[in-house]
Image (cartoon, rainbow, N blue to C red; front, top):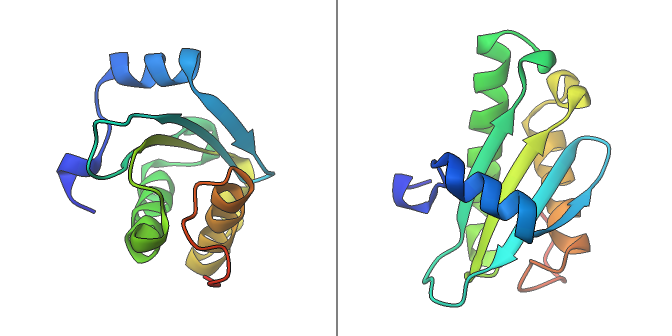
Length: 118
């Protein structure tokens, strides 16, 4: 995932938390907001220290970035997204995290084509 497609600033995170919509499952929380002036979606990742040590948190973030990279042609372009990982993600492998991410994206109607699987 290119760095230009990431949300890094705290102000942007806070704006999305206050004004965006959210959807969650047991593993992930998704905040999203439409930005019609964008050419590509942007993502922000948040993994709490409660989930595990630094190696575990970084691994979860790598898995999420890779899942977004594999799903990027299926995700609507005009949105900012924030993903917050919950405690069960520290027990999951890449494929389970990707499946959970696909679930929250489909339920929040952010996928372009619902017929394609993973």
